Image (cartoon, rainbow, N blue to C red; front, side, top):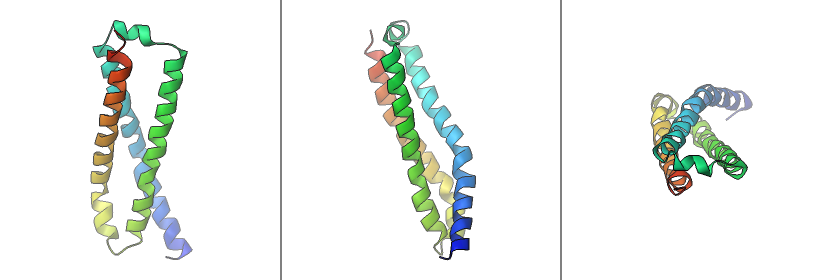
Amino acid sequence: MNAQAFRESLTDAIRFWEPMRIAYNLTLAIVVLAYFWKGYPSSKSALNLNLGLGIFVLAVIANVAYCAAYVPDVFAQASGFRDGWRKYRWIVFAIGTLFAGIITRFIAMGMFLAAG
């Protein structure tokens, strides 16, 4: 892959994945808020600086993990499967978001349902 083709693949990956990051983060935020609401009012007692910092660290980790999608995306675009990959890569996004949502669910349950 020459530098121009790599640049085009990377630009296309950014153009696809970065707008999808908003949906990814909203999905995870909805899961956390749902479990906060489900555990309310006892979940309110769990709110403190340490919890806020913990949620911030987990959000950063979730977004670093999201960046892992760039590696297979750029490599797939460099292959002969580029057109098919570009058409169906939303499936990778959906599976990854579902997986992250499940992990977030377990963490949120521990944070807010165990508060009471």
